[in-house]
Image 1 (cartoon, rainbow over the protein chains, first blue to last red):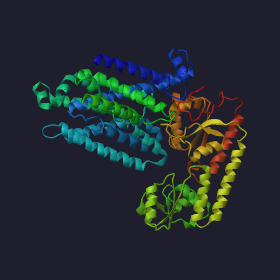
Image 2: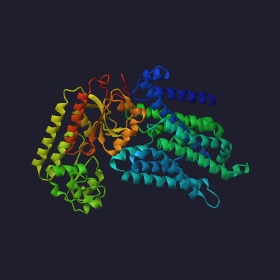
Image 3: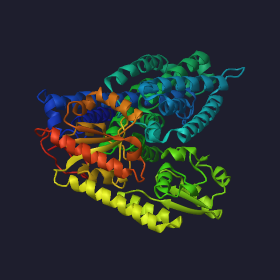
Image 4: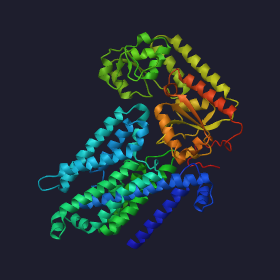
Length: 324
Length: 269
């Protein structure tokens, strides 16, 4: 069953990648794009495929993987099925800071929006950790409550900023809060790597400990897990993954929440088995969502979060009902 | 009281500025408008503080809840809906009527319509070109059908490539900037647009814009963005630039215009 699911996941991912490169926009027919992939296309067509569609696809894959792994880690770390980068305020902090930068920075400095998002996510992460820390260290419940508070504050900041945004910039500022891969450049994908590779290494390193933590703090401690260290490092790793994702793609909901649950229903609870599958499934959800966001009303783009939710939620409900 | 800069311009054009007790904070044309008391058009209390007996608003920028709250408080309100060139002209007539000067409204509307027709007849013989009116470069947001910008393009002989049914100002796939159907891009000329263009022009997606395959027509930002009497100025300038571009083109740069505008997923032939 799980081997078949593995194969299905890889086939779906490969098909989505091919489809995104072949039929990703209005400037090129699928036949022209196929010629480019065979190394025969015109220079102009190659620009479309390699400079527009490929970075966009890579960004969607990377962000989807990052969000899904962050969600899987946070759900295990906090032993809470609702935990994800949004519930904990990390994405909200990044989005608030990015919206502020977009609304008020001089146009020439708009390249700094991702940096502002990273800084906002870092501040939100530090705030959640500080608010949740008591004499006995941060407990999962306190972390979630602190995250909810930070998230509410971030939403309030976004609303205030949008209200004060000069009207010519309003559509663009709104777009920042909606999430999109349209602004992907090869540079953005490279910039995302530091927020992707080390945190993933941390999550894999603590995979076993996280699995034990999900069964309860005390039992994990009796089995030799240094709960404080694991909690701090895994939380930071998940925050870096979420911050990187929101910096380069804005807020894309449901991927971090639903993908890990979906994968657990198919592959079970072992974090070492779950993390790579969650990464691939998150990548698939974002890449497929972005493809549909581009082609459903082409050349109009639909916010990708709408598509990821529309794809993920019914699938999740069906699996949940079947396994109940 | 006028709650938007374009409505303020209409009142001035009707020579009824003496009726204005306050204008929106963003109203800066004509220069005399800047000297009038300012009001935060989102604050009902600030509006009431000026004791207006008539509030003029627009669907293109004012919150309808503010206007309906003012109505429920017994203040006379009038909202124009400038979603096409004809509706802009209709707005002149409507505002003049509530101000009690219907003749002036009729004259202003007729003069506006005449100018639109005259400008549009100058490009009637030209082959229509596919184009976009750019509202924002990154993300790519354009004016779609159901906006006066759409009419502005049509009156200048430009077929809007923005699809219908996706909102008045849809966000488009930036790949459209590399589409061979795109021959003209119209942009309001302000600092944000210039800087945004510079960023797009430096990226691969801006190749057709910088190679001369797409004519880039900059319009003065306020006349082109505010649906008031100066839209006629913007149209006349757009037509001038379109004609100048035709003269400059010794040979066609594109393979011809293919009007497959509203087909989802339409591709290049």
